[in-house]
Image (cartoon, rainbow, N blue to C red; front, top):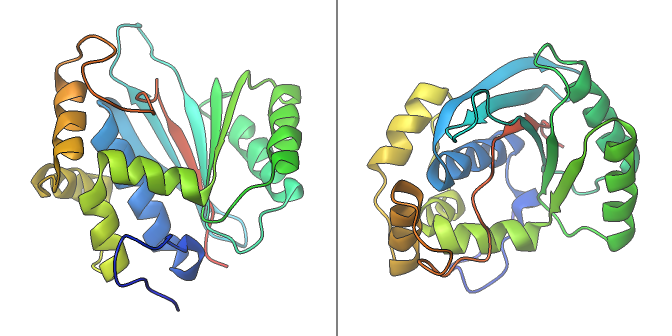
Length: 211
């Protein structure tokens, strides 16, 4: 497995264990937003994929649900994305209003377009796909301390409760991360903090297993 010695080189998430990747995504979600609930849900399929269902703490009475698939595969296919969309909309929580794929590898424009159409056909109105480069950029801006820990091979907790404690205890490492935390706790004008990626409106995350 290739591990870069610093954060200068691109991170090859697909070289790391799938469970490590999904814990990193869970921790990142906790860091960037405030949640009413954020939990693992179920374990099904040959890939032992888990769902994370959550509601962001916002002004709406019930919040919005979004489904995130953590796809740490060396090759991510449209068929796999369609399968995960089908499982998400069949879950007891109901059809999510947003579906996000967090990939451990680059994504082609064709796959993005095809998967977006598949989500819309399934009744999901909002769809996003974060490539490995985009996810790394988000981590660098909002949770670089998590990225450093991940690269160093230090374990993340697995239970939601332990992950919350971990996220609260892990100190920011640079000014951008500190500003991101302040912006989350004390929302201000749009230009209060220099960030390319606004907080999620609410999240349900689907995580795929190892490859």
